[in-house]
Image (cartoon, rainbow, N blue to C red; front, side, top):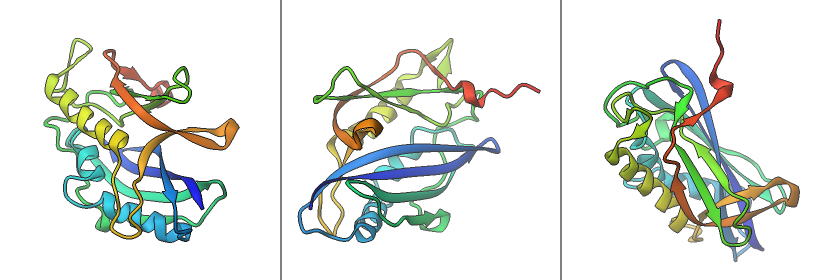
Length: 200
């Protein structure tokens, strides 16, 4: 069928607050496999040792809990959603020592593509441990963990069946398509999610 884009929604909570991230994956569906089977295969592979879910949790403070993952095809047409709840996830808690600093502060990964290099993608991580940030600077060990996750998105992974290489992508809503991630960088300045700031 050709290149398809799958949307991955990661839901969780950090310090009792709901958080959610949306990422995208591209793959070449050479055998025209139905989209639910592909979505299930992606989530199954992501939730094995040393794969996506483990690397994600390795970047987050210990009071982060991943509660679900949803995956569905969004291009060239839609598809049904596969959902893995907490009991099906590989590692659901953050592994970084210390509690979240403040929920508005978060490391920012910037995704680069070769096709449209001026159009970057961004992923704000759900939070950062108070032990991993000092005077607005991220600790080296956290940068190592973020690089491992970023490399997984760049290099991709291959489910057992169907064995399609799936790699990270930057979705372009106006074009209804996604560009493969060719590289990434972690912002040297801590990200700030203003939508998480709710003064009372």
